[in-house]
Image (cartoon, rainbow, N blue to C red; front, side, top):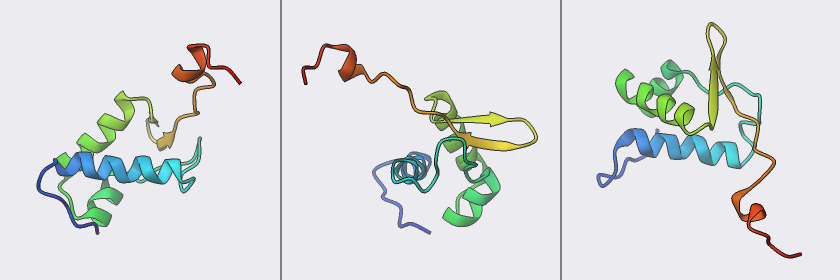
Length: 89
């Protein structure tokens, strides 16, 4: 369980942890991420909080959900905004 800060909603802090794990390669593209129940147990959060975490990650395109199978890390985009603005190499 993490120690939650009081200046930000818990769902945002848990979503940050999941994003950090994805960035670190703990969860790779196409791999399954924890379910809402898993998040509730690991972080000691309520179901609605876990639901908000998953909804936010889906809306931003970080994860996708397959009904009956779970949620998975999305494939990274090939083009990054900085690459599209003509960065020189």
